[in-house]
Image (tube, rainbow, N blue to C red; front, side):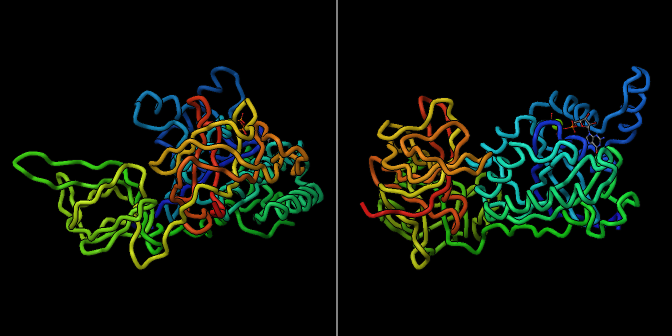
Amino acid sequence: MDNQVLTERLNIVIVGHVDHGKSTVVGRLLADTDSLPQGKLQQIQEMCRRNSKPFEYAFLLDALKDERSQGITIDAARIFFKTAKRYYIIIDAPGHIEFLRNMVTGASHAEAALLVIDAEEGIQENSRRHGYLLSLLGIRQLVVLVNKMDLVGYSKETFDKITAEYGKFLGQTGLTGTFIPISGMQGDNIASRSDTMPWYTGKTVLETLDSFVKEPAPLHKPFRMPVQDVYKFTAAGDKRRIVAGTVDSGDVRVGDEIIFYPSGKSSIVKTLEQFNAQVPQQFEAGTAAAITLETQIYIARGQIAAKVGQPAPQVSSRLQVSLFWMGKKPLVKNKEYILKIGTARQPMVVEEILSTIDAAEMATGQSNEQVKYHNVADCILRTARAIAFDPAAAIEGTGRFVIVDEYEIRRGGRFRTALRD
Ligand code: GTP
Ligand code: MG
């Protein structure tokens, strides 16, 4: 098994209320899967002993982060471990709200989530808020870790109570989760089953993670490439223009007839271009692409390239969206903001606030005049000119947007549908 080459990587995020044990669980996962650098565990244990400080698994993370943050290229919040099945990249962000914002904006992507609830303290505001956000972000693979079971005498009643209550809450959000009673501190039910909880016969945390499916890259979805830039060659009368961007979904090959939205201009792909490397057969989802076209059409940054014969993106200046507001100042109607989708930017106003939800309370708000900090809302946006997008449920990459207020990104969201102008 050891020599088997693992290629698959699953991105997971760990969330939960402050101090419920996220870092401890991650430290355990690292230690129990032998994913720590040689001698690291002993080194930290020894350091704690010398300072007469009780050892904490969370210290392992702090130590790793400190070492890594000295190299500027490594994101300190990303931690790797592996099982016999695959690699995992787990994001333990101290400012998890910050991370969730990155997810809303598409800067980070998780395929599965661990949500930690302290068995003794019970369900807290952020337990609900984070769960709600995971549902909004379209995460479908969730494990709820009822942690610190050692503090409640490994009580089945306590576990059942939390499972029932939080399960009911998840139901309201449309999410389902697998519940596992654990002790991050003692290592119960994380990598191996625990005899402290004989009443629990389900999977361990690692077994559950290994049972999750890797989301396939959106190769089989319609082709989408937001145009990043158009380069002109001017030397020696060369009139070629290279259209560059990142393929969000599908693929593109020579001979494909492509159409740009919202302009509606079309042409045929003449060549694929690649600097300093062999030109591939196709550019596919997740890769940077550069193409030239048969005919010279005017294309600008912000257009979305799609293929003729495949479902087209929607084009409208009235959009129904779900969004998560992170501005200290509430989002208000009829004020000008900037909407960013893919590489496009457009001035916009909120025409109507259809409903607002406090993510912690799951209470539907009465005021439809504004969206407050950390609230979720369904709104109708109106952009200055028509934009192209996809409903997020259909194509994730071109289905997300962010709103900028006074030079600061305030929130992100997902497109539902276009409305009639
Ligand atoms: P923040 O990053 O500050 O939000 O906290 P966190 O969720 O990462 O929690 P952390 O892992 O730092 O744990 C918080 C405290 O709870 C620490 O003192 C841990 O030792 C303790 N703790 C975590 N898991 C367990 C457990 O299973 N049992 C007991 N008894 N204590 C635990
Ligand atoms: Mg932590």
